[in-house]
Picture 1 (cartoon, rainbow, N blue to C red):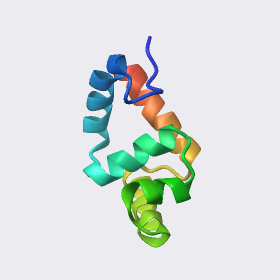
Picture 2: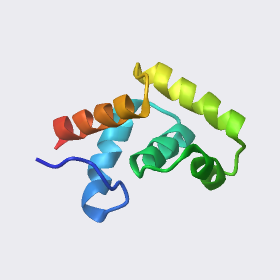
Picture 3: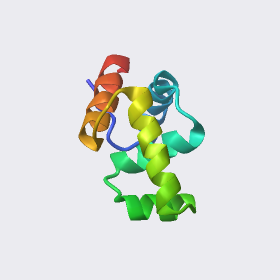
Length: 87
């Protein structure tokens, strides 16, 4: 069984596409999830996206609300569970 850890690795791209489809998030929100999976802090995520901290926090609230998670850990566990189910 494969667990999604590096979404850019060639062997994980197809798996990430399946997981991303099941998450039903916008492209920007999926990019945020990718960066969270890479353990990037909020400041780095905001820099990567070219946005300020406040809009990032709004995106994070919406991601957590849509996926019914309360934390980054919960979000990561959800993505891992989906990747396990898809592999």
